[in-house]
Image 1 (cartoon, rainbow, N blue to C red):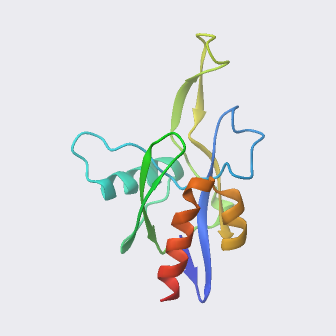
Image 2 (cartoon, rainbow, N blue to C red):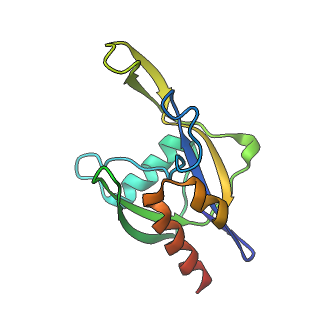
Length: 144
């Protein structure tokens, strides 16, 4: 996430793969994932951000608290100031999924297929609604 002068923009990613291919509004997300072994939650966030975008996040990091997804998963998030040129694209790691579902056939897909800077109004529409709270918290934090 980045503040450029007084305009706050949020960097969001779009999930890769056939399930998300035609979904746009409400499909975008912050890079996120599961902690490995005894990994600290901030370390997890930094690692996942890099794995899903190819961008190295840099401190300082601003804690945005937690949010509960519809699935029950609890997400911890941080904001940071940074820059990224859309012409550079993103470099995401790949995961294997069963597709079509229950076919016992697996395909390799990128976790994220694209990234984009979005102003608050657009980001609030495009992000998974359970994650809007992170945008609101970051927006309030940066206004102070």
